[in-house]
Amino acid sequence: MRAVLAALALWAGAAAADPAIVYSTGGKFDGSFNEAAAAGAARWAADTGVAVAEFEPRDVGQMAQALRRFARDGRDPVAAIGFLQAGALSDVAPAFPDTRFAIIDMVVDAPNVQSFVFREHEGAYVVGVLAAMASESGVIGMVGGMDIPLIRRFGCGYALGARATRPDVEVIVTMTGDTPAAWSDPARGAELARAQIARGADVILQAAGGTGIGVLQAAADAGVLGVGTDSNQNALHPGQVLTSLLKRTDVAVEEAFTAWAPGVRSLGLAEGGMDWARDEHNAALITPEMAAAADAAFAAIAAGEIVVHDSSADGPCPDL
Image (cartoon, rainbow, N blue to C red):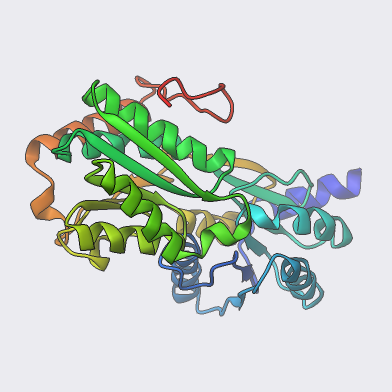
């Protein structure tokens, strides 16, 4: 135990030497979750001049192999992107007690693991405010990826923000599937978006990884508004993406490489873990009144004046 505590004391706050990153399924350039994490690794590499080793698994089965190989090669810390890596990391971390690991979007309880989780419901509340104000039909939608509590949390926050702004708004939430394939099926995402549009939805949030690219395409094709997630996706369809809900996996990766510490790190609005994107591609869509309402909600949540229901921890969503 003394040896473990001594190692933790030496590790905590220590910068990376030769880090590595293992992406989730969907690929590094998924335009979403993985790509945001890659941006954080790239910034860290640019700032330090140290290359970051990378691996893009084709499936879940390759994740443990990649984590183990990087640990054997002396890479440290090794960042595992996505909840799908929790099982692999739970097996690998104890076998390499001198290697620091980080996982994003799941908790792995081990003395040499830092777990990053996000309060997605806080950011989703803010974009729900914007969606409700932008909607002309009074119907908004969300297409999620894999049907898991994390994605349900997006939907709950989105609905709560929308209905706090416009009590009569209808919110449609559809999940793509219950396997990892739900993250990488843009054709299915487009199909689900078109079904929501047929029901009157004129603003649709995607929370589906690579599948969400199809959601945004279908929305643009139909002349309605999409809402991006994870990375800034405003530029994919300028003037047709209302905003993007930024899940700052880049911040988590940089923190893991710069000041790793064991335990759980929760990132919400107050910590800079979530935000919404404003740029030249959506400037004409965001009125001053909309920006003011979103900023007010953001500030109130960050200050603790609004506590957004967490459907993962607090029970079923009251508005879904």
